Length: 81
Image (cartoon, rainbow, N blue to C red; front, side, top):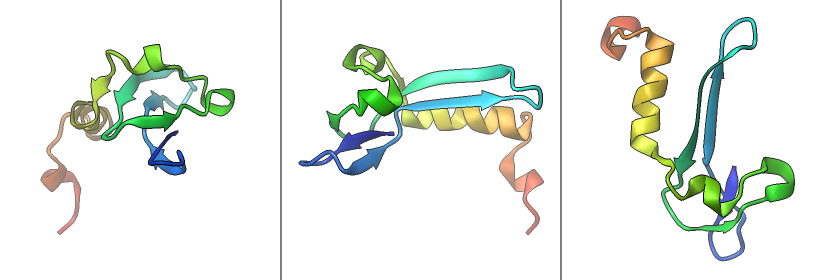
């Protein structure tokens, strides 16, 4: 999480990673935060401005994650009603 807001204290998603049961990375991307980043928290995140320059939009990342987690099945079929 990088920081947003005037003092950088607002947590913003900037990276997502999915691993399988053997800890192999199956999906990794940087995510373009929904608001300007004011604190990259580099010491903790390792994220720099250039990592986010061409980052995937959040909505696109959410769709990709849903595809991985749901194995392509629509959410309404997976969730009990």
